[in-house]
Image 1 (cartoon, chains in turn green, cyan):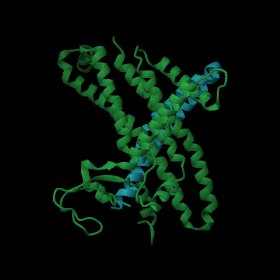
Image 2 (cartoon, chains in turn purple, red):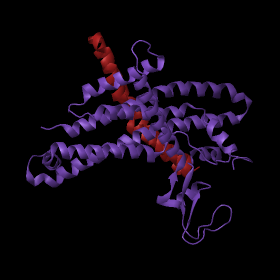
Image 3 (cartoon, one colour):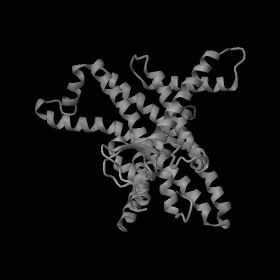
Image 4 (cartoon, helix red, strand yellow):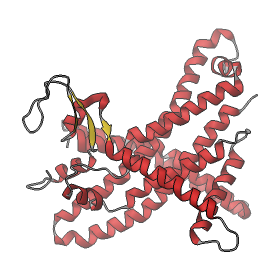
Length: 292
Length: 75
């Protein structure tokens, strides 16, 4: 494991591999020399290459646990606040929750031009959930992975939004909602919008269709990758600064200052990316509801 | 294999160039707008942050992929 002579890139790559559980194909030679028997084996991967060999069946256990755990925490916390809401003794947490709900409500009110009771709660969930996932990035890089490594858990990526599967999964979820509402609200209008939009003449249908479909697919793709890119780059810089600490005692103060500086700037990035993800979700859903 | 570093550098550099110009323009327009109508400043600022977030979406994705290239592919 990352004990003996450990290079910087080894440290970095170690911090970038997820805890993966999946099915190794039969006849695969594992790290510890054993070969997987017939019919493959459901096993925890010991390294990036084994995780790659698992292919489609690989499940990022750590991203799943952290994201679902944060989702449950969000639901529990907001539900407790809603139940305990009392006007006479507002606690600090209650004010914070009210502020967030009010902020999301205003944003939905002025950028969503349809009548759908689902959009405001969806926007609140997306905003707070993505914010909580991004917030994990501020926890010092080695705190949780190393303590878990001592307990025998080899790999750990605690920030779910640095895992493209999570961000693209959410983006595809929004995309499915977009298609569903486009079809239910606009019906045939949606097909007409895709085929006749820029050039309103039947002979241009292939050109229109191509341009509109590319535009439609670019939305979830950029939505998911934007969050992933920001968080991945942010976490990479945290890891690089952490690796800088190994460069000797002279680097202690500069690296510490850089860590604090980047963490403070990263607070803005975290909230901004959660806000943008929410606003774009609202805007895409309101475009799906527009009925010319 | 050494070309990967050049590729990553180009990705980050050009992306950064585009984002810098974009956000610079946005910032200029924000200042102009709030100077012309100070009471709109908060609303302009929200729109500025939204725009800035959208402008540097692609460059940041470029940075993410470039860092992946540097550390995972060539690491």
